[in-house]
Length: 183
Image (tube, rainbow, N blue to C red; front, side):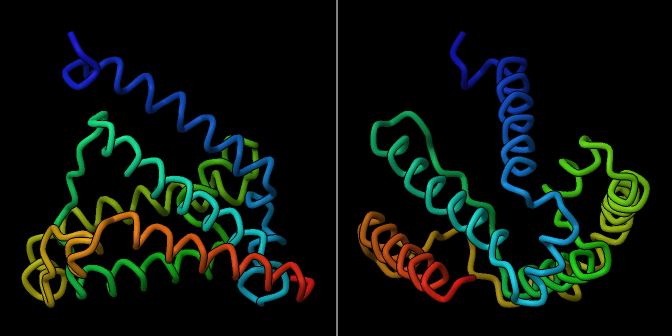
């Protein structure tokens, strides 16, 4: 039995990686309400630094695994409507509570009552509402401006490593600028 067909092993690996991710978020300081509020006020860019670090690491890692035939990409169909709606809901929750989905779970696990009593129930209620309203939302908003299952390299018809290198250089330049600006 390979890992691709072993659902139990996949769940265990996902669970362990999730705990590790939550621990890393906590150690990085992004489960602290003040850090998140200061990010929203453009005073502390710890959140941006951590999330962009995860993004560029994950992006390179996924394409390395794909290059060596250890993983396959299965992009989900995207659209401008679903991106805008998701961004609005994410932003509203982030601004109201001061946590994103990953940091709220990590903060709840650390024992922060605002995350445990406000964030986790809010995410569950939001997920339930989304599931209940999905058919109407899909027709009215989510499927608008569909761009399908294409990745950026497919959209621009270039080697994935070109996109990865451009994004990684841009992120590293941003990090350099933030550090020298004292942010």
